[in-house]
Length: 321
Image 1 (tube, rainbow, N blue to C red):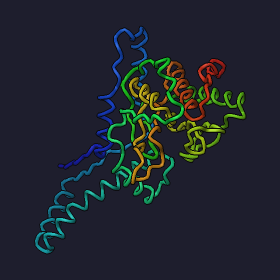
Image 2 (image 1 turned 60 degrees about the vertical axis):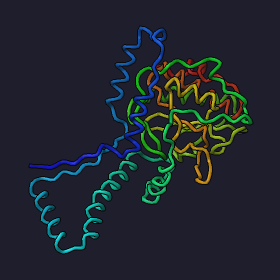
Image 3 (image 1 turned 45 degrees about the horizontal axis):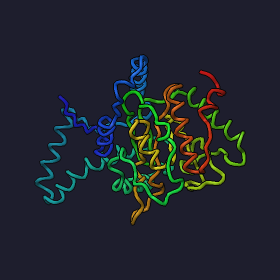
């Protein structure tokens, strides 16, 4: 005989996954194409391949362990004060839950937060103020420059399939629907070609926000975040973070290509290391996706440096799949 107690992830992550399913964009029927079925099959196959593991919290007691626990509980009722016993009964599962959550934090891999108990404690504090709805755009500041975004002039198509599951604050990672190494190399090659043709405007280096991963920087940023960092790509799942104009954030959210970072709240008495315009863009799964993501990176360059570039065109000159 055995008793199993299972909690499938802490409430903030569970609520976020429910919101992703609820907020997956529903494109008009006239925008569906003949290759939707094959795309959905690719999405389903990708969703089975979990890139980053997030273990549920579970306690399994066999008959002997259950009997031993019951005996200890009865002994405690007769030898300990009620307040102390109640505190122990509550503290044990809470400590086990915290331990499980800490290991899930480590499983997300390297990021901007040190993988230490102190780093975890810092994120636990930030989690109290995390955005509850990452699918609503930030308010538009009339004094913001550039005055408008560029994606609304040529609207994005809807992203096929449901949104991927996402977990974490810093690091924030995509749990399924991963991008392939070939697609990552194609996008990275296009960015490098952009830098080679504009060395006085752009450069590449390791992300100063993530402390890991490939990143593009503007040498003369208009909106400064992370020393002019435009975009960084996570090597584990091939998702990416960038800053966009609020107009473009609205377009990205509505079409299902990304979501806001949970720490991108409006700065007040609680400090946040990222601005309200900080967003995650999901990993491109194929050549069609990477062309759209290239357009979104162009919008990030427009917002960061007020420069119009053509990364999508450089993809045609990149390595073929």
